[in-house]
Each structure stands twice: as structure tokens, then as C-alpha cells.
Image 1: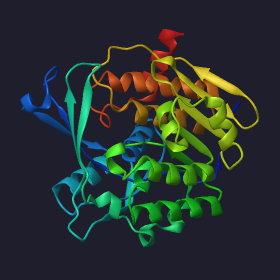
Image 2: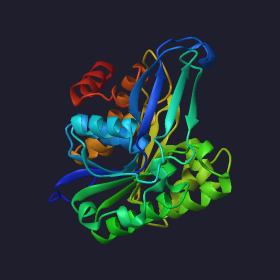
Image 3: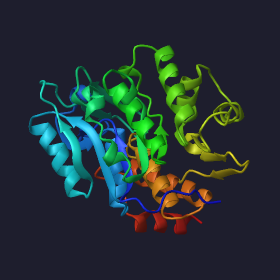
Amino acid sequence: MRYDFNTDREFDIIAIGRACIDLNAVEYNRPMEETMTFTKYVGGSPANIAIGCSKLGLKAGFIGKISDDQHGRFIEQYMRNVGVDTSHMVVDQEGHKAGLAFTEIKSPEDCSILMYRENVADLYLKPSEVDEEYIKRSKILLVSGTALSKSPSREAVLKAISLAKKHDVKVIFELDYRPYTWISTDETSVYYSLVAEKADVVIGTRDEYDIMEGTKDGKNEETVRYLFQHSPDLIIIKHGVEGSYAYAKSGETFQANAYRTKVLKTFGAGDAYASAFLYALITGKDIETALKYGSASAAIVVSRHSSSDAMPKAEEIEQLIAERS
């Protein structure tokens, strides 16, 4: 089974939400208080997905707000240099700064992120800064859950979704739950449910769906039953090392195993998964193959130091799939 998109659009995907700075520990196997050196990368789930899609050969664009300083210029320049259209990245004029994420790599199993997300520029994107003409030029609008956590970013994203629906642009909702950004799980559940019900495709981990549904140990069947009463026609639920599942509204279920790899760190897997999964769908591959692309890309990125810079090319993904088939 394949998933259909408009073929007469200039952009394959436009992502909206946060673009920030990742500072990844160079020194492994030690706590952050003993780490002295970090390497700077572009970070943020929707930015990483746009970068991953661009590296795979898709035409990607980005809507977001960046700081008017060296970090903001670094983000814009990096994304532009890897092929992402940055013409609708807005430069903040009110003194807000780029979000910072410091990563700690104690071991492949024990990684953590220390976030600086107070008054960050990306959460000040205004509805008036979302351009209808830009969105209608794309096959996909990729929405990240973190952008819903504060106003005015929340309203900007809801406006973008409305415009996408108006112009038959597929809305992909990547749940991207970050607890430190939200006031409460009840608040998260309200806005996640609101957007998931409007989306065409929803992607997330089982734990993220539990947050959305306000439950614990939720069942895939219950999630699918709920969402298929609304707009979604494809739901992706990831179960970590147990693999991932795709549920189509037409009744089919697809599954792909996770690929074992030498893990360096645990972050970046979800963004790599989403970019490769969407690449496969957009280029006409069937849903089961798309799940394999997502799993292979995630395996590659967790074996490398960064998230954005580590996004693989299509040949690397296909080689890994061929080797493990």
C-alpha cells in the first residue's frame, strides 16, 4: 500500500516549529559536570526533520523564528547550506534567544539533555508570520508537538494547519513530547488531541500517545480506534527496540523491526525516523518499506555524535536495509 500526495507542488515538505542549538558532549562516559568540551550543531525536532529530508534529496522548507544573534545566524546558514529553504525563517526583533540543549553521554543507555528553553525565539512565532502562499506550495506540512506548548507559537501552528487543510496539503503531526516545555500533562493532552484529530498522519512513540490520551500502558488498538474517528488515515506508533507499527484507515497494519546497531547516544532517533519514513512515502515506496527506512535511519543516527549533521543519505539507509534483509 502506498500513500498519495499532491504531485504538482514545489516543496515536498515544509516544517514548522523550533530550530535551536545542540551542544553535544565530546567526552563520553562521564557526567555533564565533568564534561569540558561540546560540539555545536543545529537542533530541534522539526529543523532536524527538514534537514534529514533535504539530505535525502527532498525539497524542504522551514517556518520558524530564530534569534537575532550569532546562534540565529548559525542556524539559518547551516540549514540553507544543506538545501533547506529558509526564506520564511523570521528573525526575532524582541531580544529572545535561541534554545540551547546540552547533551550528556554517560553511556549508550544513559544519556540526558539539559535544556535552556525560557523565552526562546521559536516559541514567539506569530500567526501573522505564517504565510498562506508558502504553505500551499508544499505536499506536506510537518508540525512538531513542542511548538504547541506556548503562545503565540501555538496559534501560529494552528493557523498553519488550517491553511494546509484549505489547500490540500497533508498535515503530518510528529508528537515530539518534551515535558520541560509544558505546564502539565493535562495541557499537553488537550493540544495534542486537538492537532492529532486534524492531522492526516500522526507519528510518535507509544509513550507519547499515552501522554496525548492521558493514560498509562495504552493499547495501539484503542489509539487507532480513537484517531480514525477523525482526520488521520495513517498512524505510526513506535515501540523502541520492539520496532514500529503503521495503521491505515483502510484496515491494513504494517510492522517493521528495529535495526540493531552500536549505540553511541539515544537522542536524534525520532527525527531521523520521521525524515526517512516521509522520504520513502513521498518517493512512492509502500508503507512497510517506509517503516524500514525510518528504522534504518534511526539506527544510523544513534550510532553517530550529532542529530542534524548525522542525518544519512538514501544510499546509506538502503545499504543497511540490504545488509539486514
